Length: 128
Image (tube, one colour):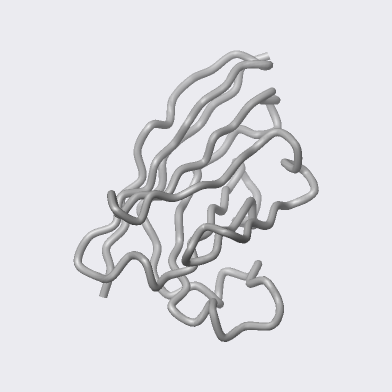
C-alpha cells in the first residue's frame, strides 16, 4: 500500500508558474501509474494529467494541454506537475493519485474510481 503526500501549492498570479510534488512512501512507486486531479470550489474533482509507470507516456486534459507538464522520478519516489501560464480557472485543490493496474489498461484512466490511492491535496490559487 502506498501513501501519497502533495506539496508545493500556493498563491500565484495569472500567467505565472508553479511546480507541485507528490511524494510516495510505503510501496513500490515505480509500478504505479500516477495522475493529478483537481477540485475547484463548488465543483467535482476532475482529471488533469497522468503518467505511465516508466514515465514514457503522458496524457492531459484538454484544458491544460500545452501549459502543464507531468513527470516523475522513480528514484526519488516522486511525481511532479509543472504548471505554466496559469489562469484563475486553474484554482483548486490538486490531488495526486496512484493506479496499480495502469499497465493493464487499454484506455487511459481518467476517472476517480480507477485510482487506488490518493493524497490529501495541495491548494493552488491563481489570482487575476
